[in-house]
Length: 175
Image (cartoon, rainbow, N blue to C red; front, side, top):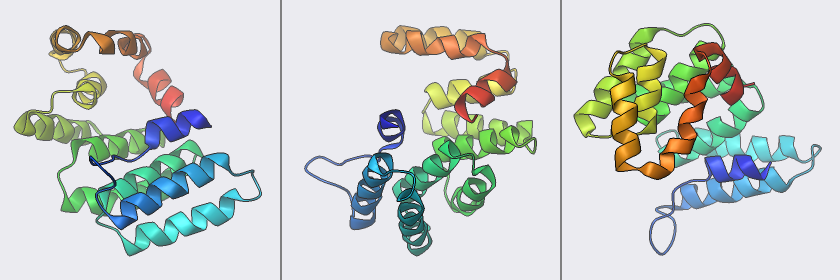
């Protein structure tokens, strides 16, 4: 469970949180991870209210949808991600939406290609970009993986996830 918190914790600005909803999302994430099963529904209800009150706050949506995804509530996570992704151009959140749709067999390559396009336009050729290349069987995948490994050697150990086929990778991220 602590893994969920470490993966899905929200960004912290120097000296504190960027805003109050982000701080609340961080606290709810911690509370969820530490809660026993009987207390989790209450935390999720609080998170749901926070997300509905702050539909444009990327940190709140990312945290909540990550917890929902970890619980297998893929459709609900998608329903929260779609409006945010229509209003914003956030490659990371869009990749999450693409992968969740793919997980429930409702994905398409165009979604991943949009992630690639957004990443290239913003110069964010990172692990999310590489993941989108992988899921579209893009011919640039191997070269971009080598380039990313050269610029950030600590990521090299993360590349073992690409030893799996696409379905196995999705199932490992979203069981």
